[in-house]
Image (cartoon, rainbow, N blue to C red; front, side):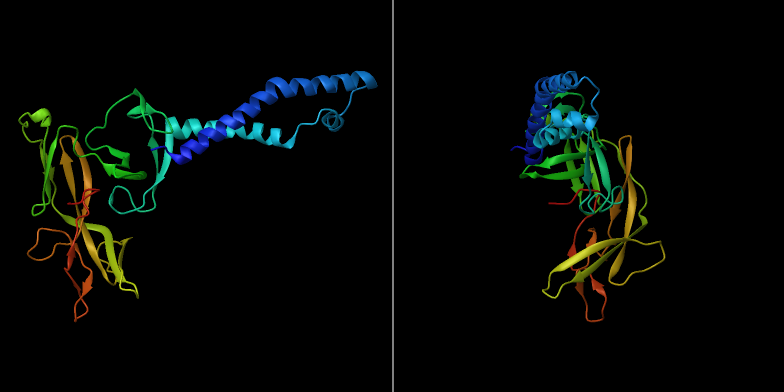
Length: 277
């Protein structure tokens, strides 16, 4: 599927580029000839205002030609060097927060055509622990920002009770998997984040995240916990929810009890971009 914004940008750049070339190599020389002829006829040096009247530049041509350099720079930078993205959700907390802006290297893994995103020149491959941006396979219009945990050929298993992942590399082509990659976790500690919950008049539940110093509380919210995960030689932080008694899952309280407290009614995992299916 073609990237519509990139397609429009490419077309606009091509059209304005044609206008810029026409002006530079055809229309501009003719204007200078008329201006030189006018000066020769009067026998004196004409000012810029008079010269513009003698050899006027059409407004549509001036606008198109002047916009071309800007569009060309935007196209090259956005398509092949860097592209800005904004974080829409809390799935990458605490590494990336909701609303954060990031610049993504477009050349890190390969040079791609800006419209269909086909790789033209390979420059590298994702490494374990990289934060990557990719098209959601079921809807290529959506950009997903996640951390690369498994690589091609890996078998990744998630234990919802221990809240740990096991990675076995070299499982492709029907071969026996290799030894599990060393994965270690630090102790669970309180984080600086609180998740709050509310329900609209229509009954629709919603939640939000707040940064709150340890020891402080917020109404209708729970203190999230965190720990460090080390995958081989890559270490990053993982944000988790408060544990429900008797459950190995993280909690997403969404129902208030008669006493006014938040109950463990629905559960979810905020695991630095990974959620159980």
